[in-house]
View 1 (cartoon, each protein chain N blue to C red):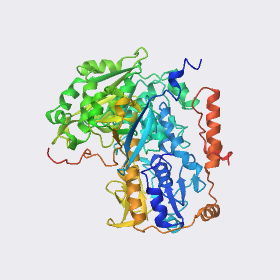
View 2 (cartoon, helix red, strand yellow):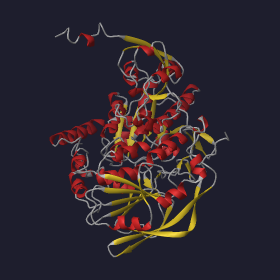
View 3 (cartoon, one colour):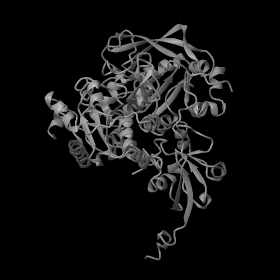
View 4 (spheres, each protein chain N blue to C red):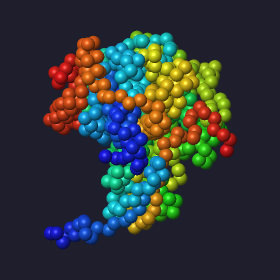
Length: 131
Length: 490
């Protein structure tokens, strides 16, 4: 029986090591098993990433920013995730929801940035500078 | 526990040795609890007292968020982990400004964080607002969320075929969705049984959601819209003339990719517009009237999204309500378009009207600096201002009372975080005084005034009871509705 489930046992589990860049710009180094998502890994490592809706795709509090190279290699987010990114604070072109991104070998040594608590540049009714 | 930043806690402890700080947080909604949680994470040796006007904590999580969105409601558990700290006390059922003044708070605490949100509805100020079968969104939302002040409002769905909702934000969609849930879907919510009985036998055929400006300027999010289209009982409809007026050149610009200066606004607009292109279109007035008159819709509910209409007046006509609307057109530059009236009016005959044009805050104490223009606490990035300019050090604000009642829980968290960062700068600059835990003082004060309150221990018993009662019927919880029923847990 044990052998049957050996791929789930700790010893043979493949791990990946990467970094979270915190809101105060400090780095947190994390090592996590392949297959876990960024929100789970952040929580396990005391990285300050909220996950208000328990991964039910109902909020964007676990918004993270990926390096472009990595972002491009991942599968595109589903429309429901995009809907929430529409509402995310400090959205960038390589933003994702941490709960929807599972880590694999491609994450080795990358830096995952947490968004800063800045206001949206543009709020309805304000005049943005001409582009 | 999730930690904010990395070295902050040790830094603040180092700077301020072991002298305690004591803070009051006014309001136990997402903004207040988030702030409490992060203050505990970041600063050593502090006492925090959370004051709440309602008996139960969590504010809009319990009484505002839709009852079919149970998973996001579980954020309450995470926020309430502050209960684990001995130095954290909850005073549920205490009104600041009435039971305790803010001058009393200033004397007792190192600092006060105001997070009491938006307690009232923005008024429409039109004739007929007070008629029977006209409700405010807050009444409806608090009714289906079993708020003690609203659970027994007089509402009746008999022969109510057409319902108009004025305002097109997420609250309007929440209400439309809850009104249309089928029996199974209703049972999975924590709506109380009496309200479920009323909802499940309703005879709604059409819900008309009205916006003052155009389709692109509509306030609801695509997330809410998409969720609702997945429920098979709803059929979404748009009205062709609205679209022609809505999609002017300026509005189309608001959907273009204009780069990062515009944040995610244009992206959101673009995706919403794209999604709504799949909705059915009502060609003309004749078809519209036929839809509104039909007696039976085979169990389906039409959600008719209308635009460029401002309510002028509500009249009672026999059993019906006539909603008189001003037709508008858009005017102004992209992102600053306003609705200006056309020389044309529309009468919408309906059976119930819900005003959902947003919430509003009102001040709780004349000594609290107030921005009368925006109806928020007078503040600069969360620091409260005295006489409109000087900072009132030690007084802070977060959530809707800081920014105005806009945005989802994510923006509330982000804006609270901004307040915390600014507050910590004041800590670093030694502007915050040390105060020993005033717990006994507060308890004595409340006792003197004969004010009953509940603490976290009592809340735990209430919470456990509600969940237990719910489990018996495979429901998330059964809420206690009457204020006097809470008292038995004291």
